[in-house]
Length: 397
Image 1 (cartoon, rainbow, N blue to C red):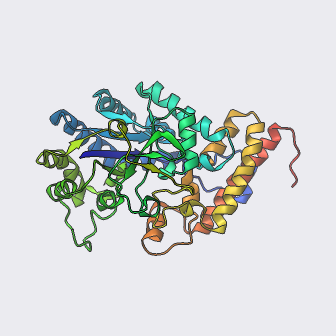
Image 2: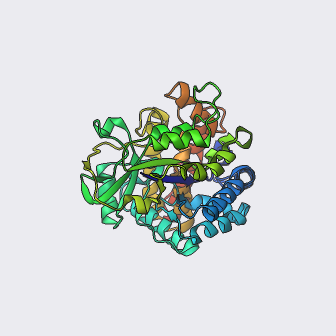
């Protein structure tokens, strides 16, 4: 059984407070100091200690493997707030036992806007990985693990050999998530599926004292892995799981350090990168006609487009994207792409309840989803004015 530990590194460019009265003021939409302060805090609690523990695990356990994806907006903030984090990432990749994945540069909803936006963002991200790390990834990870037959065809057109996807019963039709599959729409693209129960045991439940399995220890978790049937188990989660979503006091960092040793007690378990695990003959083709993701209980796009606020904002963003492209102004296009980052729509979520609602509230700093919507729309309206101004089109007052 191959174990694939895949961690995602992302931070959005959060918006500053942008009021209607700020339209035309020339103010930045993004709160630079706040974003960098947040990044410095997470670096102290999570990025540095977890990266250092992973480096030690790679040094002490020759069989240990790891996979990472790093958004462009994460790297931009790291360069300004904590450049040593980038150096730690480079050192991990230099071991030859860490794979880097391709994705959208801005962690955006580019896959839902007309071409060529998705292709351009993925190309921008690939260029960043080659420039910063010398990496040429062969596996694609879409924003929030979005996957569909159409996205598989896109991956094939971009010459990727694999994609990640959620191992959800709703599309597996009774098949287990612990085997390689190929895309029914693009058979050259192999699929590696997330084992969401085992992933969420760490990502979401680790620090819950109400959970029947609390406390979760590395030896217990390794036994669960050893008892899992199949060929490959995908443990996919946010990097911030280790020290941020679960604070150091919960023992999450010690769990991360101990896991490679505990896995070694089970000879049939071996670590693999996504590129190693995805190679080989697939079990069967998998068809996913409607886009799924790893977000929320419904595993669809509802986390970003599930209510009228979100859909209104996204449709407006698509329209502004047309004039932003026509403006031929790199600064306008860059700001539009930052506004296309999925997080902004995530903050507008109002349609859920229970665990889903709590997760959305955890990530948002707005007083309400309506406040997030109003702030976003003010910034987007100002961006539209800028784009039209570059085109010499008068803006109605």
